[in-house]
Length: 319
Image (cartoon, rainbow, N blue to C red; front, side, top):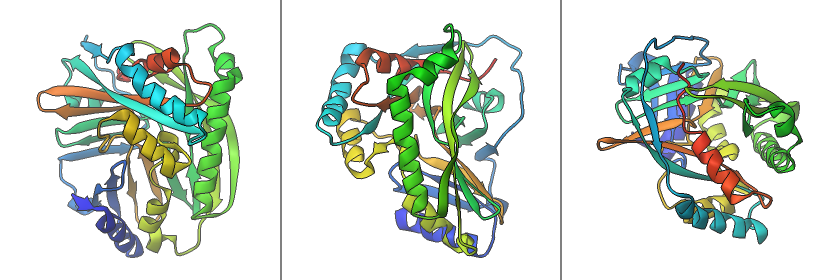
């Protein structure tokens, strides 16, 4: 495991030599793994932009033991108070939910349907639907995901697109990511705004709202991959805006360490790069499993709805 400055130096070094490598960076940019692909062992498994669909063909148990609304409310109130004072425009509030399942981490990794999947030793598994950044043909792309609704609700697509709070939250994140990409790229623009992705889970189908932002990189970007990631992280969609103050609010309100949850992982293939935000995340702590989840809070957010969204996002995309 590498410490902060070594992470980004190593990415620059391997990128300059155009050596393909895997990378994994935690939420606060304090720890990470940067490993040339030819040195990877079977303790780290990943799939990038996966299209594979593999059914499990058996019944399995998956039970949630979330914190009570009474425990969640004071955390929400810390965030909401800061939003009302103007200290933040959007704050992502998360919390771990204890789960019980007869699936192993390896089975969750194998059978989950997600664009981005990672299993790190026996420590955690991630099945993320959200890209962080992709670099292709000297262009950088980001696809922030903000806004979730149960697809079984009548007229769900129109409801989520018309929701004033969700629209405001999404606009804030798109603006933040556009500003972030402008630190490392030129000609940054929003190329798709508020499109719908469908995500199937073990017990329902969810609709999620995303946008696409694109910019142009310099020809020597390979030499600066680490520098680019240092400037872009933490990912705006899972902290909020403005970043520095919002990170302080998150630390006060959450009261636990996210560690690699809401960090990023990805691969550089020697020419291009793709990466994911580590959401939809199950972590082992001694003999227990915890699913870390959350959502964006704005001044218009209602505590009960945000609490229910936190629980709704505790699922495995296995069916």
